[in-house]
Image 1 (cartoon, rainbow, N blue to C red):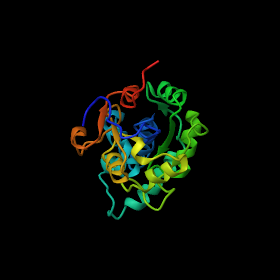
Image 2: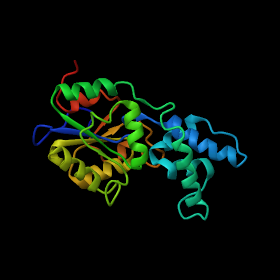
Image 3: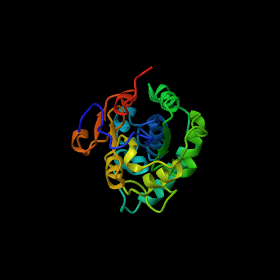
Length: 230
């Protein structure tokens, strides 16, 4: 692990990003959906700063922290469906790109590097969010949690994206803010960058994830890729 450049075995060809907590700050809308469930159960809304670290884990993480109900609980499946229905109503109310992401994507394109998105977010949510951010036609591959037979941390979604954009996994950087992102990259034989600006969760210290690099802000990725900031 380092915070600088990678020793690439071949020149970098592409960058793949997680969506929630990496490219886009979606915590407000995800938290809003969870708080709707809390209000329906007679509970007060939770502050966003308490929900934000769990946003990358989606319904599972937010229902867990907000209602203390987890997969395997008798109510979990129904609550998950209710959460997803609520989220449908507020997909892009507050969602924005993180500071520096727009400039980063511009510079990747100017440098001739391909980029795409690999997320565990279901397809029916991924596409409207990408459209709302104006990224749907720029991303060369957008893989959702239900696009392939397995979701992250399985390597298949990342490898599928590499196939679509015709990049060598060893020359493709995967950027994410969750331990599962780094595990998926490792399993796919891809270098990885842990996005320290993201949600991160509480289960493991980011320094223990085993990422190839840790980046404090999006534009730090330019140095990782051997590019100069313009």
